Length: 111
Image 1: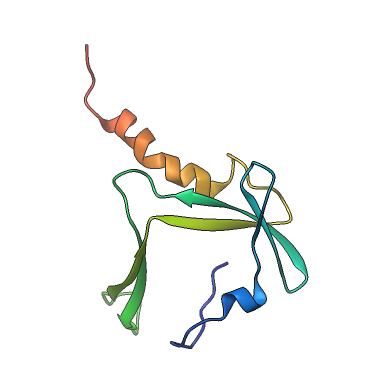
Image 2: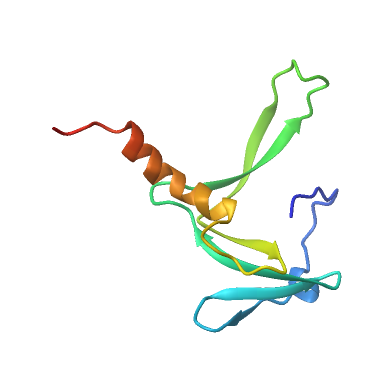
């Protein structure tokens, strides 16, 4: 869920969101403001690391360069769908397949 929270303190996530694993699909379910969310944990593609970036100084226009810094790194993430089970057609899953596909498309061709 894209959002911005103006706070730098610790978050009591487990107080509001309790994820449970069901079946052998490793599907997670939670409720957020009364709406059911279904999620799945994904690993970053091999050789890649996920970054959380924070803007240091906000640009005053679209023409100015932005300055970002790495605030944390991750190798796994959980993505969530609103009431629909996670599947291989989800954009996040397809994005994780892109590095391997790009290598196949742009890599050297053997005779």
